[in-house]
Amino acid sequence: MKVNEFARQLGMVSSKVRYYDRMGLIQGERQNNNYRNFTPQDALNIYHAQMLRSFDMSIQESLSAKNEELEAIDQWVGAHVTELEEQIRWQEIKLLRLKEMQAYFQMMKDGRERIAQFSRDNSYNVWNFGTGAVRTPGVQKAVEILSENMPFSYIAIKIGLQSVIEDRRPLDVSIGLGILERNKKKLDLKLPAEVERKEGGEILQYMLEISDPFQLTRSDLKPLLAECRRRNIELKEDLIGRIYFSYMKNGVFVHGIGVSAEL
Image 1 (tube, rainbow, N blue to C red):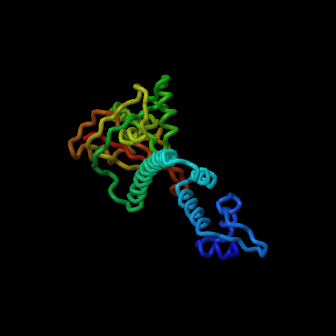
Image 2 (image 1 turned 45 degrees about the horizontal axis):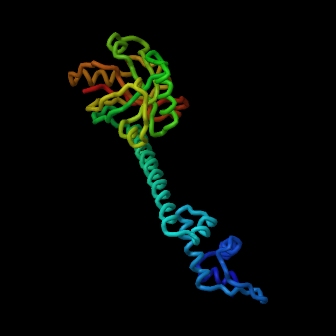
Image 3 (image 1 turned 90 degrees about the vertical axis):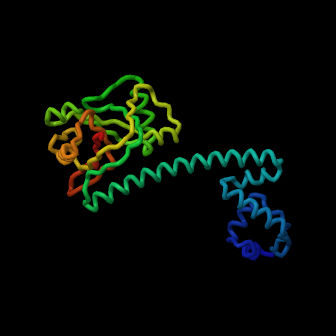
């Protein structure tokens, strides 16, 4: 039987069969007329190697596996189960973050009301740029941890309460990095004690676009402040939010920001 005929029986291209041959998976003896004495065992070896390859075991590893006891194979499978579970966990978090971005894009495209009430999860924030920046070794360590774990962490923004109340222009703005508690737990991150923990709860979030967050004015927050007055909400804490995404709008680079007030 020629290689291409054997390959057709296997349901694969002949080049792959030749590759498996070079790797030593096929034992069929060569004959003088350019035919090979392929056996069902050769087919079984190739199918077995393909199955293991689908789980990221190399061909060389699959060859070695033929000589391993059940316990060794079980250990290999166990290690790959753990590795795959970790990959799935990370991909699930990435998917959630991408869906958050999708929701933001859709809201902006639809031109819907940009003030919404919803429940916010507990979060951790660190402020390393702006008026409220803190630069201790613990904060620096937190910045490094959160920076390395994007996109599971996010760009955080804080607007000083006093600057809002006193009608300062511009406002006291700080930016840094933050992460939701549920993502922190999923990643098993250990953050320094200096990181600011923000309790979750009902919030009123306002979405806006601005080219320079450090030049935010009270006028930029006018819709949010007006809604707070309408609902008789007294501002008692700094306004906290995040920068969802940055993009070009009418030739200007802007940041899409969600700023929230506690209810």
